[in-house]
Length: 67
Image (cartoon, rainbow, N blue to C red):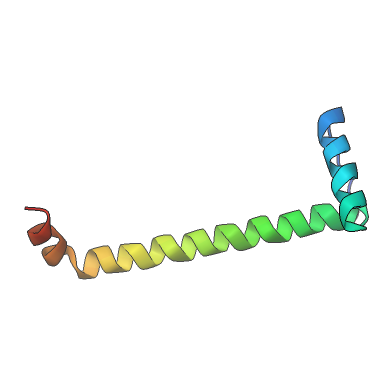
């Protein structure tokens, strides 16, 4: 699906510079950035879920350690 991306001048210059630096098109740079952001968010969500599991599982131990 095609779309139009509207950027201010500063962000357009940044995108242009990154595209030139990596020898990619602007579209490819945006796609890479989206993929990396989604992966980072997924990793953060998995980390939060793991922390919550440990916090719940070890609640009594954590309580004793906090005294």
